[in-house]
Length: 76
Length: 222
Image 1 (cartoon, each protein chain N blue to C red):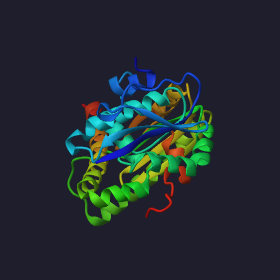
Image 2 (image 1 turned 30 degrees about the vertical axis):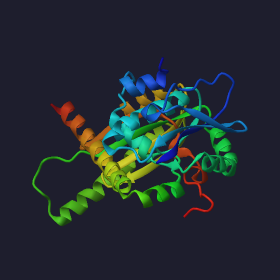
Image 3 (image 1 turned 180 degrees about the horizontal axis):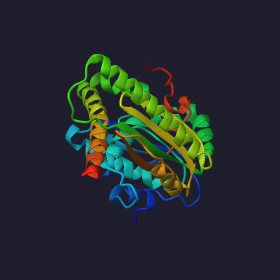
Image 4 (image 1 turned 180 degrees about the vertical axis):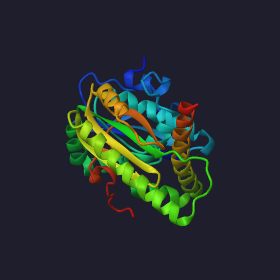
């Protein structure tokens, strides 16, 4: 049984829905970063390094687009 | 290759419930150091890039489950340890910092307000016009952040702001249970024309972790 926080995050039952983009942004971009481990992992797997950067860039861009779309929707 | 994926650190209490599974259905395990606990899974590394969204949601579900019961210090999804001993060494070295942060953040959550400049479809401005417009927008964004800070004085424990080229992101620490008050206060504030506002939360107070916890130095690694 999900608690309130999970329910809000996964089903959008809070007043302002938490989107997949919000989740991606937070799990990839906020919190404790194990710098040493990350560097070691990345050194052996360049694909992840590239992917990580692409994802982070995409999230920032997508959040901006989402906000712009919402504004347009309100103006219609 | 197997790695140890850490989800979040938390203060252990009797009766704390743990989620049933982790990323990719991996078993969830708990490593402890005194009152400090960290949830982790042994995972195949690296993740498949196409599955990253699903992994992110599963990771978030684990962290949210723990966050629903108290403060957590979330790890970033792509931070992994080489093995369990590395995680144990890490906990041993940073135990005090985590405990201090988790105690400080025990009854609070992080709410967010993202302000974006919503561009109009119009003729491209000249370089001078663009710079002037940008300066005006930054000024407006700064004033808006100040007004939000003032309006939230009664309920905010701390406010942090990150500027971006198109606006700013405001992180507000509020007591658990005050999320609705935060929303109603911020929703009622007028936003200048051409700005969009987006609220989210509650989130773990990741932006308010101390630097030594957020970006710990790991002995023997570069």
